[in-house]
Length: 315
Image (cartoon, rainbow, N blue to C red):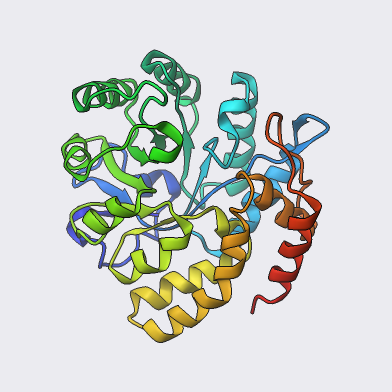
């Protein structure tokens, strides 16, 4: 969901409005995302999108009480999908959630113009905004990054969430740069995957920082962070919603105990390239097939066995 700056991430959730209204597009004061967001996988069967499986997943996350979905990102294999596939998947997910959850879409490329073209492809849909990384591989200067994100923001009237993931882009964004970018009226939050960045700005009540490093999510929430974008929340999302509630209500011992139960599975979900372990775990639950798109490989049989054991130990 989204909340206003005036609530400073300590007030009540925006729960009584529709997803489009909750996104706060064009609103003043601006709204920022918070809570548990699932960076949703893209189900596949026989090389094609499994749109029925996508709808089932999206409905499941609505019922589990998560606060939002992000589609077409890293976990969603967005860079491996065609334009038509991105549009078809977006339409299927939005239809499945029936406006009950805000849905953001990941857009990213080396070339800023390509990112803006992706935005143009998707802007006809009722999305809550876009998750945008720096141009990967190029490693532009801070001035170049300000230009890049400014151009993407100019291409849409919807909010943007920055995506700081240096291990994938090779382009770290400093807390100072992120603060500069967040001064833009349409750049409302950051998915922070760098531990140093989380420590530097994760508890700032004036910055909407969502933790994208699953192993650090409990520390982030206990420090007052706005929320999480957690691939591991695909599995038993109800437990991650419960973890957020415990952290926000100051029940620290219970929060730590719950995360201790989740931690072995969280670790296993990143032992092989994402999203293969997540898809394997979902397949064990009978929700979707474990299929990934090449060059990504399915999870190994050994890891699948360990995932099955870890899932059986969850409360």
